[in-house]
Image (cartoon, rainbow over all chains, first blue to last red):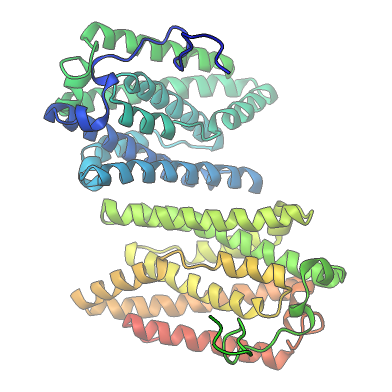
Length: 248
Length: 248
């Protein structure tokens, strides 16, 4: 059924993996600094999923209907399964999940405390913005990871269905009362600001992770590239906010 | 590999199902009052699971360690899957889950509001006591339901692992400081009192369910039997509290 002798699984434009991206975990993790960076990355991702679980379960209490409540509980449960996948992997590579998560607990808890939504719509916007930015960020990183870690990261970024749900509810609320849009736009801007400030704190604190981000461990990831990555993420955020009916 | 010609799957002492318990859903549900009673029962059970999910997720925030937090999140997620099984069944028999749950939302929310735990240990005792009583109650009822509903109810009562976890943590806390035992014993008594008062309200409000409970629809379930059922449940509760190191 092949259509060409040169048929390849990679989509058009995707660069052929080289360096670490062409290696599996067994090979790549022989480099201690790479291993430490991945453990950090998985620890941050795991705690992020656990915090997302808690946040969604909390937001479920603000749900206006039983159906909305059940929908949020379903998403929370999906996040928990992602959390399990990541902690299972950490255990499999003989790293204690708790120890890997610990450094990221405070920054993530602080972020959530400083951005506690005051109502159902703020909760939806927060979950949507947070999910999307985290997902963009991990996808950018994933391309530069060893093949095993890459498939794990990609699989836990699978859509939990939150995006469409939030977009639908928020758009309907803005249509019903356009003033809601202004308030939520301000809220989204505040979320982005807080997220960036916590991310900076993490980067400053975690040597291995930062070294990987600015190159030196994973391939082709120099400071200029990090800058471009943040531009792409911010741009995607702006587009999403516009689609939601909010000026970012 | 049979050991006897009379080998049977039923455990010793278990009565052979008769009447409704010997029928499947298709046959039993032809009786409208039985159908209404089962829809009520599943609605109550579904909302109970959703509320348990929320409660465990909330308690996860009080967890003293990251490991405890993850353990509670896991149980919450298990409760959510039970919730899904029940709502899927309601949908399959063409009953709207939301409508079936609605009558039980207020009594269960009231119960949870009036018994909000003030710390991690109170949360554990509450989850343990609540889970166990609900599980005893549904198991008693299950024996009198049609075979399809019975297997569903039994499968969602599968141990979520909460029991052992709570017992272990609470016993350790009492050993470390025996005064904790007195406080938690009072707490467990208050929980039992609130649970009974909400249960009475539900029974008074829901005709089909009450009729099934006191006989008239399901077999062999007269008022005296209901009394004995409540005695058995209370007795099991007392034994569990003693095992926990608490005087009920």
